[in-house]
Image (tube, rainbow, N blue to C red; front, side, top):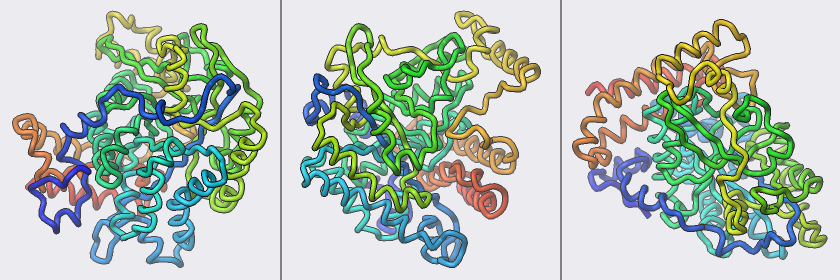
Length: 492
């Protein structure tokens, strides 16, 4: 376990989440090259024709809505205001956060071979601790820390406060990623953190501005991540064409080139389009995988993989049908042995690479809309001014062109109409870094100080996507209050 920073007293430990202060230790834990599932998996590729990988995304924002304006989890607010809106679902949501800790052991005891990937925001994990919901946390610890449940369960990293990447200030990308790693390790331990190698971006949102995407992938790799889950329509081939149908069911190599001409890449597993919650709640990826067979990558045959993620608690289908439908595929796979199995993402990648698949042979893709930029700018002679000029020209002449990134839905902008949130968010970030970056550079232990951690917390919280997703009103008011508190901290 990562100990609390020595400068923190007990009262502060209770008030603040463990999101910073052990950067060197976290880096040493996460930046290793050893396989994490290969020695534990009970799958063999020889008799597998296709597979499916399902992930559950869980999140509740932190809001300044406690009795005296304290920071509390929205789940707590739901419990305390049962008559408002859909807040009557609070107890069901709480059960959803816990229930995989029941489902997985039960299926294993029945001789099944289940798989699930879990993505919980840092906000939610902190909220469960704040609420004293040790029942939920202990259930999650059971399937995370007990060796008998590996590799049935894989955790995916994410942004600590559910910040959408394209509109997160670049200097905060790594802070968000590391904050989640700190907090996850503080709950589940460093051995569990060593096994977190896949990343699940909030809202499946991926930046397409060349410099933002480059810094995003750079931050992911520096934090030890090997692969990223990406929505299919947020990608294009290097020639600007859409991904082929077959290409979506094998790993891709996502390449990012910045305005200086530097390139970086990371493995991407493609989440295919669809009604996400319904697909996962009814375990449709399993039935889709039955229609796929093996494909060839660099001369090596591998099973195709259907990859899906959905909110793990939202909507009646996930609340009510998932508990009924989740066990069915695992019973069928146990009884029929048809060649279709469940994988977890890192497990699948380690298995195919152990079969001598070279990641350099994965199909190569880039963020959507980037082909238009590189048609106008020679990548080998790129400059920041040249790229921005090309972007400006495209925005003026091509109504379909934008640099807002792409997410699970294209009918919702995370930028347009939210200047009253984005401007303060960017201002707070700039003030935070102006104050603390020189101090941290001179003395890395500054990240253990109370003032740093408190200011960091508010800086990250203002970036929570919910303050835009739910529209103007109460949620943007929350964002402004968080900004006000954060600004007061950095101005001390």
